[in-house]
Each structure stands twice: as C-alpha cells, then as structure tokens.
Image (cartoon, rainbow, N blue to C red; front, top):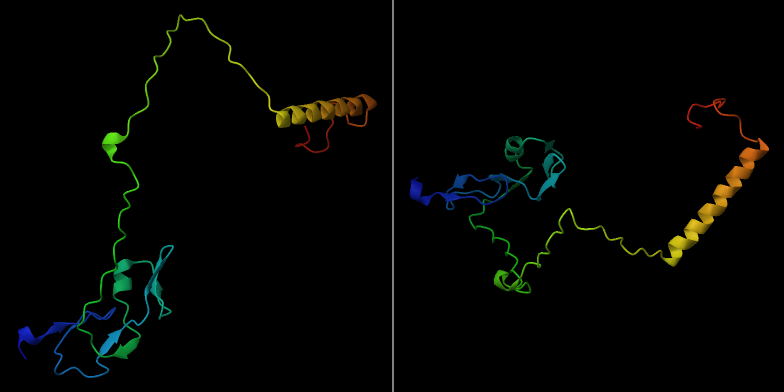
Length: 152
C-alpha cells in the first residue's frame, strides 16, 4: 500500500485514512446523527454520551458501522447580504445643538398630563382619603405596636 492511494474518510467522527480498493462494508465507525451543543454539554444526536469538554466530545467513538465515505460534504450556503441598508457615506450624523451656558436663566418646561394618568391620580387621591378615615377610627394599632416586623 502506498500513501498516494490513501483517502480521508468524511463520515462524522471517523476521519481515518483508508484505501478505497481494500475497504470493507463495516470498517468505518462513525456517528450517523448530528452534533448537539446545548448549554455546556456536547453530544451526538445518535448517542447517549454527553460531555462538557470539546476534546472529549471529538474523541467519542462512533455508534454506527458502515462504509468509509471519501466524498467531502457540501458546505452550507452563506446568507447573502441584503443591500437594503444605505451606504455609510449617505448617512448623516444628527446636528449638534449648542449647550447653554451655566449663567443662562432656567426655563420651565411645559408639562402635560394624559387622561389616563389623570384618572389614576384621581383614584389615588380617593384611596388616600379612605386610609385616613380608617386610621381616625382606630382600627389600626398605634405606632410601634405591630405584631409583625414587616407591617410598617
């Protein structure tokens, strides 16, 4: 056997060199499933063996027997970049505003309260009044007499 006749096996988990003329039908020990990477574990979908070390994962013996394969698998196609984004030259940065000096007079900002917030504030005011009536009636214990420490 000469070295120029040896071919690399492309079955997952095998990677051995073999002579295609002398190869038998059950000489290759490989993984028929796909590699699985979940959390820190690495495993094969066809085996039950799991490991956290990548070197140990690569050294897991195959679970299927078959013929060596000298055909290299096709690489997955790369996703083409979309040209929907404008080129970077046409993007303009926002205009910068000058910062006012520290001596400039302060200007109050206009405030606006939405209808939904106004409704919540009105409900809050009503619930505050009801708590005041409860404390006036004496239903609640006096300050510092709580039975539970988290009740203040």
